[in-house]
Image (cartoon, rainbow, N blue to C red; front, side, top):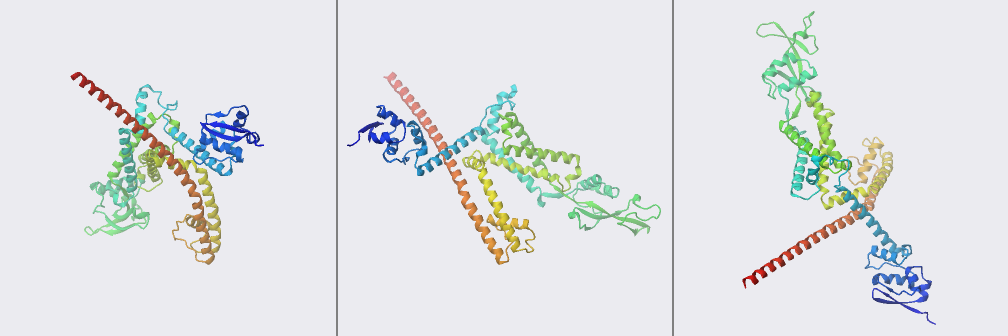
Length: 511
């Protein structure tokens, strides 16, 4: 005898199923409600079909045309656990949940980045700054897409490039000049060099010139100090002549006879500084850029909503570090004047201005690809570390075997073999170190193949993550643009209707 057939109405569509399958099927709200006489449900009909199939076949699958998120909510309504999903659909659900979690974190990260809510760690409490703080932050904080903000971004970009250009090209010999004679005399005084008394009058006569005075007879350049000094002949100072023997009290002095009087004169060789310094144009450009970035950071600190959140950004930290290093460099040159002519560790402080290149990332953060790329690297930092660990493991292994197999003049240590393994696994291959033995060539082959496989298997993970977020951001931007266009069209339509009504009323009055 056939079992009783039950007719279930879901979303206006009628389904038929035997009572035995309902009673013997898994526990759910459907089973409970049907047993209590409820057979009409206001739920989506297309998502009820897989639930009905669960009682008919014992398998639960997600419809191809259904959203996994909507199907999970439907399972929640019918009180069916997602654990009974077939394995093929579990993978789809897991991918959906991972993507949703990634998008949720991305939206939260973007919300925190553009959060302009004032906090107690800001200058918003100062009354006379409260009114203009939001306006300033909207301009210099790149928070609003206004004309002033875009102009400020363009000026900042120009200043960053100008600062990098100034620091970089100030090291080029074309944009350097020789010391003037007054600067040579100043350096000799600061370093207590010998020969100041003899050279002072000669150098001061042609103070602003970069050329060696003709009155000084120069010899060949010194072979040390990178040609920063030249050797000149001058009359010996009386203090440098021995009072007992009447001879020069210095190893580089000598006697010569005056060709006119015939008396002996004492000649000595004196080192004259001849360093290179920056031309004045680059000094002025550096002052201009430093002034701009000083005003910029003051405006940012005075107007930013939260100082703690401001300094959690690597870009802002690098920007502040570059400015602080610049002022420390200026102070050191003020107290140690001789350092402006010498190459020393102080040059590192000046070159730290290159950190301003990080400000370019702030501009890219305002673009879709820049925001997505930054977050992709941040979200996958653990995966990147794992790739890095695999790279180190392969590098150490192949380097050790390669060192044992080769041991040539090019490979004199295992650290040198590390360098070879690193550039081989990353498929760079400069060619400065090449294997010469058969075993070495075999190691090189396996090293390069393992490097290719390592990156080929891991890079798609980041690429898929990037494409997923990029598509999401593109969809959000497109939706915002559509809403904006619809709003404009609606406003224009209302305006046209109002104009037609006004014209109709005018025509009625004329009649």
